[in-house]
Length: 443
Image (cartoon, rainbow, N blue to C red):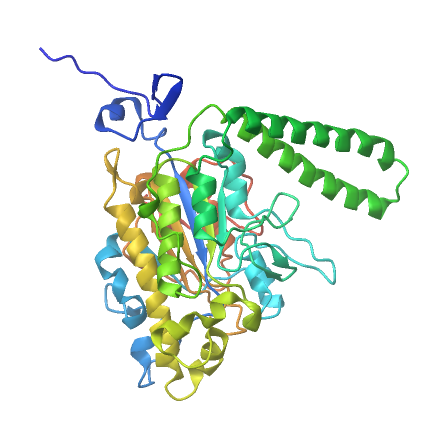
């Protein structure tokens, strides 16, 4: 009789000094309980809001939010690509970050995942949802998180080009080049692991020296300068943790992923192909368990300075994204912006479909992945009634095929707390949360 056997997910084939991580296979299932299956989060943000013509308008079919029917809802044109995924999707309306309602219309992208409140002229963000989750699950993977945006870098206060912020509220630089992201995830890096180890050791030594010198300096500083030094040292410690992580993974080869799995030659001048490449990179990062947390900022809210401002030209639309958003209430402007909203939703749907079609454990990757998608404006400069989608996570108890409108008094952070609870992340609330959003989960 054939003997049954199973493999651990992190089993490696070893020989001739080489270790290759195996892909997920059916025989690994016996060793993976539901609690051990990776739980993931991908967060995607877009600026400037959506098309929201009223129900008496001739362009009402371009309203981003679904139409409510007697016992259900109907996707209109902007989100019609989600129809085949409705059992995996919840549309959220009426919600926002209360702190965002007091901010300028171009300022709220910074707090999309933090819910932070900026008081007066003291710009001080808080930890973002993705980085909070990464701080609890990041040790399981080579990369704690994957931070991406079309603009790259960090931007400037209230005009950040990243969704991700550390526990000190400092922006985490975003990557924008598909080639650079692919190389970081799957490239061989330095020619010699010995050279990599030496580089990491040198970096660690320099960080030790910085921390040692800071101790003698701190007692000579005033209170405000001490705070600045503490923030700086927190950044140094973040680097120190990344060095430790890199050292720990140094002897484990990166997954072998063919370069033709992603269009690495594409850039922002080809918006559709570029967005697809960025989504593909998140998919591959999740599939290879290189990370379990990813963010992608499609564009930032500074209007003319974001690279994504030119993206609507791929549909032959005149003007730019910011201009389309401003013109959505005039003439056929609702249809023009709606057509671009539709294009963005199509790219999201493609990503979700790929996750759904990829088997994992007793379900699919989508069942074990939460995808949070939306904007911090409803219309341009209006910081309420965020257009939001939460997809996936069936194995975590989420129920879908819903259009929920909990009300303007329910903070968006309640959704974040629900996600943390479902992922098994310890928490004492998040930002200004008041509890979970019970309608998102099976009772």
